[in-house]
Length: 464
Ligand SMILES: Cc1cc2nc3c(=O)[nH]c(=O)nc-3n(C[C@H](O)[C@H](O)[C@H](O)COP(=O)(O)O)c2cc1C
Image: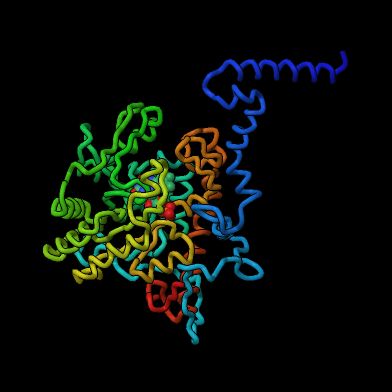
């Protein structure tokens, strides 16, 4: 028999075996009805997102981040030419499209100057370690566990290079968080890194976790925009020795984050909890929350105004925010999107005349110059960037965070995939991206006649 006859025979035998399997199995009606060819449908379904991303979709089509947006992050991160040629390809006549009013007499300044916060974090409440954040752009909470060791290292090192802060996420402080970046230690409902053997909050464990780390602030997480009001499970298979160490839980045992804090059950209790932590740690303490029930915000502002105490900063996360994994219902429909959310929260503090006492941080697709500037104009003092920072360390928006198979090693614990991500190279990209965002914000402020982007006012913006 010649070689091609062998090939044809082999293909024919394989096809026969596949057809027999397809006809006899009962799971897929499609394969029973269309043996062999039915497999192409599954193949195309699997590679469809990639094909659409590379071949079919336009520059402004994809969500959550369009190709233009991703290209801007990639190019800025690499220090490459991030300009766009030939003029805008956006539809400027679409409703909701924002236009910033440039000044006839712009400031001719150096946009590479640092952009520190205008407010001093913790100053109002005389926290021992109050400080002025050196950067209004900081890295949002994403835990070691949802992100890989290499990604956390890259972000932390990058934060150090960029002079910004790196929020630990609710998974505690790991060894990968100790590469030079200042930390915001996030404490979620699982109290990871701050819990005793029974899973209850422990101030001693919290202080022990912070020992020797550059923790500048603590954030008590009430909720995040992508899945507010939900608890979560970290399956035992994912609780490796390293993750267990950072979280203060046993190796290989499934751990649960409850839907709510066990340490307090009302607004007065929340304020007391914040004060208890701040007294013990000395650093500014804030809360992070998505916005649902509007009464929570007015009652919190009234309580803080009446007692003259409470969170030093408030991170408002929009419903469009990211997550490692969430049910579609919660990701799509629970919690207000950033601009509505921020309006509700900020107005409550403004009405109680205490907005100046609190540093407001915004997150939820704000890691690009225009959305960040809009948030600053609405009253935010600083911006947290989550998925945009993931893009800077190599994320390609494969949207596989929940499967453990992230192809770029960013949101996975699979050692083979993590190997591909070089933390040193990607730390430079993190810093490049953060620096570019700050630069563009300062350049916009100068064009509008201000020396700081947080001075842009809503009446300098037209929204179609
Ligand atoms: C992979 C991943 C993990 C996250 N983990 C946390 C977390 O531990 N705690 C938290 O408060 N938010 C978490 N978030 C939400 C982000 O901190 C941020 O609030 C949200 O993604 C909106 O910002 P972005 O649009 O810039 O990504 C996570 C988001 C992602 C994508």
